[in-house]
Length: 228
Image 1: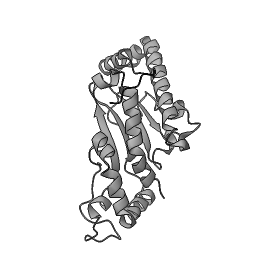
Image 2: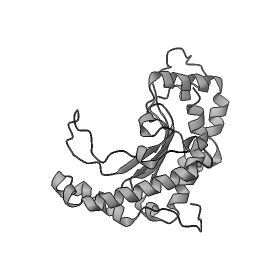
Image 3: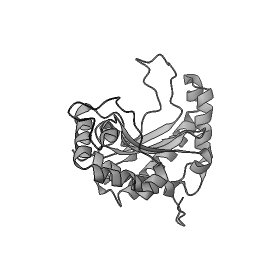
Image 4: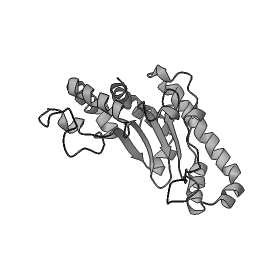
C-alpha cells in the first residue's frame, strides 16, 4: 500500500464492530436500539466514499459532481422474493459510477464494500451485463483483443487484482467461432476485477490510498467495457 502523509478519511473499528454485532443481532428491535451506532457508521462510510470520489475525479473526471449518497446501497435487504428473510445487510456498499448506483447494471465503475470477517473488497468491471452491453463487450474484444489483453495483463492491474474473473459459457457465443483467438475471453459472461481486503488492512492508515491505487489500476478496464 502507498503511504501518504496527509490526513484522509478512514474506516474505524467502531464501524466494523457495529456490522459484526448486526450479524449476530439481525432483528428490527436490536437495530432500532442501536440506530445511533448505525447512523455513525453510515456517516463515516459516506465521508469515506465521498473522499474516494473526489480523488478518483483526478484521473476519471466523468465522476465530477457525483455524491456518495447516490452511490450507497440501503442497509435493508429486499426480502420480497427471497427465502432468506434476514432484514439487514451486514456490510456497507457503494457503487461509484456516473449517475450513481442506479446505473450499475449498464456502466462499469468502482464498487467499495466494507464487511467485517475479512470480507471487504474493492471491485469493478461488468457483472452479468445485459445482453446488448455484453454483446458490445464481446465485439470489442473480437476487434481489439490485443488492447484488452494489454489492459488485463498490465503489471499494476495484475499486482492489485490478479486475473480478471467471470463465469464462462461452455461453448462459443452466437456469432463467434470456436477458433477465435480470443474465444476464452469472449465466452465470459462477466468481466470483473476484485480483491478481498482483510479487516486489518481496512483499519490501516494506508487503506484510503490503497483504494485509490486500485481504482486507478481498474480505470482502463472500465473504459474498455464502457466503450459501447
